[in-house]
Image (cartoon, rainbow, N blue to C red):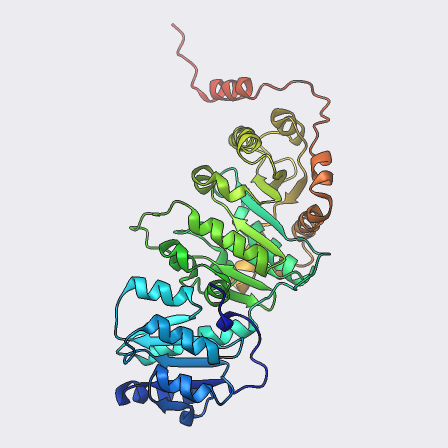
Length: 430
């Protein structure tokens, strides 16, 4: 259902108005309205029907709070409200009925949120703040055919290779250097560090999406995402570690779809277990950025993931990024690694422990905190390549991935076996 609540802009209308049935709710609301910078006189006595009567002869406000407590048919009355509201009005409803089906129906009809009475000041403050953010959330320019949406999923071959560090840095670069509206989706639901790296609270956006996929639409995206700056927004979670992830992945697919409409870029921090459990997440991804290290374990898992991608995500272009590279300190050589995976490494990021510590202390992404670091220069090149992948369908990345090693065939299994034999203690001589 297309609702007039969801489109348009706030323009020069009154910023806020409320129509509330009882004095108890008004007593809670008025101080919060004053705190938000609104006139307490805009908190009117009377419910939804009073709102319909008043707005039929006056301009609707940017944010409208209506009480459904005296409404016998809330959905029908909401439709009547929609007829007198101008496009762009963000409507928050409140009521006494604690019914999930009613909540979903109201959200589907275009209501921004539904609050259960009795109200608390904190509950109201959060809802009204979220409603305000709708007007400053990033929008995708209508009719802009020159800038196709580009999505990249970043996958670490092993834990600790620095995939999440690369995710936040690239998202920051897309938003600042490339001036692209960017959505960062951290799918490490229990242990994600996307918000932490940006010095933000993760919020409940991703948790709400997983629990209620039917709520996901453009308005939900605008309300649920946490903004790092004007062009970068984050969706993540810190789910309790005693709560297993219960989802079939529908919510993630819907989030990706809404991101394509609302942003220029999508960056997904995709843990390996999520990659395997929800292969359909890569259906619309342009580039899979595979972060690895020059180790035997990473070489083995790079081979396995590349094979998996070939079968499960043939439309995505793999990009190999080798992180934490130390001169003379690698477990295996770059040449041997490339021969084992039968393709070139696209980018090498030098190891810089001091820069990583500096970023953590500042509460900034690695790229933002260390703009002159050689590692940041490498990350900037990666970001440039991904932005360009939207223009050439990944052709340049595919070309740079072709193996040109002069070492001939390299048997990774044999090398693993050789290493194991070297580490085993020699048998005592008889």
